[in-house]
Length: 457
Image (cartoon, rainbow, N blue to C red; front, side, top):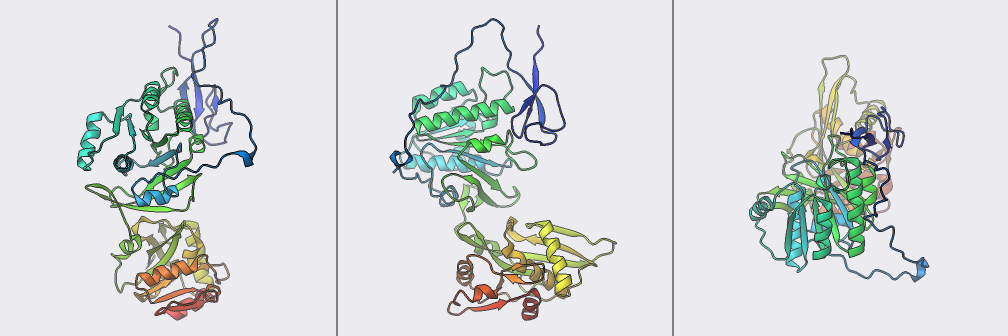
């Protein structure tokens, strides 16, 4: 019996080599080459006809002559998901959603299928991991009993292609892309070549038929979608589910969207009846805030077009070691180290002998520089053991010279603070010159970190 021929494929870019190497010659990533079975070549045999068509045969057109797509987006029935998608599902769109196991990807998509069926749409749910009976049990737990929802427990893509061609659904769900395989390929399901070819075939099918398709993707321990990195380049939308499985809140972010913004954020809450939309996430995130405790500051961040208030917490305690500890959750560690150096150099706050712990309540990740002043105020509050007023919100970017720089969309941030009952907002003085204080609110403009700390404490 002839020995199977193997090759090594990069899990990041799909580059194939005959021998293993520590570094991929294609993308330069380290330790990404994995051994796969190469397709056997038969000598003397006639070339096999291509399963996929070589192209559409369409003629070149002038851009001004291309007809505009007047189709309306299809609503999923879930407002937060529509927000992240840019307004709804686009006809023929290929969308990839990834997240940790048990985060709620399949639950959310099953709820989307139910909402679409209630609108009279035909939906096909393709499961390569669960049987039809298991899907029935999940649907019963979620209270889903709708017509026009077809279920197919299959992971051979040639059978999936036949069913998609026969049914011609409006929306299809493939759960998950790592379990799909093409029988004519020798490699195992989940390999780089299988994922690439299966995604390519599904992309062609959804573009030709106009069926919007959701792909569920597993993630690696680093948090990236398993498989070649080019998988994210092939699809139209890439969504990530974030959050701890032990907590009730889930965050849905778009890292790629050809049909809308990539800065939008959807907030969900895991309940017994499935994923519930959090209509007012700012109020939910601040509901458990400790009253009268030092080391806490409220910051209003922008997630796309949505202002979101969160509680920035800091704890400073004397260190008993030569090197003080810096533990950060929800913010960039390098940025926090920079701000601590600014506090010590420009504001006279001694942090060299203090262990500093930073946390953003609710599991949020602060990536915008506008959170700098809130982080500095929280650390100074803990160092002084003095609390910030319960009706005070802080925002502003901090430079290396200790100056407080202007931030974008300040009016929307102030309006959100007013809606939740905050009466005082500390912001950069440059922003204060451009906006007018709402009735009943006090806006405090500052130029430096030292000035901000002297006003608050």
